[in-house]
Length: 154
Image 1 (cartoon, one colour):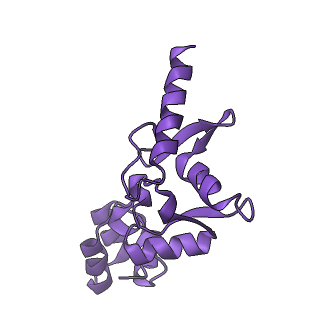
Image 2 (cartoon, rainbow, N blue to C red):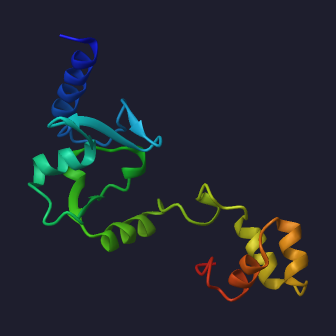
């Protein structure tokens, strides 16, 4: 048996023996973007939480259903079968928002601004072009912040 196949078998065995361990702990093996664990399942790469949810809950009601982590530790790669249920994108996003794990604002890797920057921009009487140069963003970004099109929750 090749080393890759041995490793794949070991990882699969680990998943199956720990998916009902009764506690949440992160996936220790390969991760996609440092977040969700993945495993080879039926010959293709799949997210561990989807595989475990399929084993525990059955097939998803539709292809569009996602795995919801009721424990709030999906961002850590939890694969505990007791924490996983099928849900819609809307339900999953609501869970993230309620549990404070949704990457928005300065938590997002794409953000150039902090919450304090946004609050200052809203209070400021400065010209949008001046603010845009100061914060190295576009004038449209400044307008969107002031009109609450973006950063609405602040």
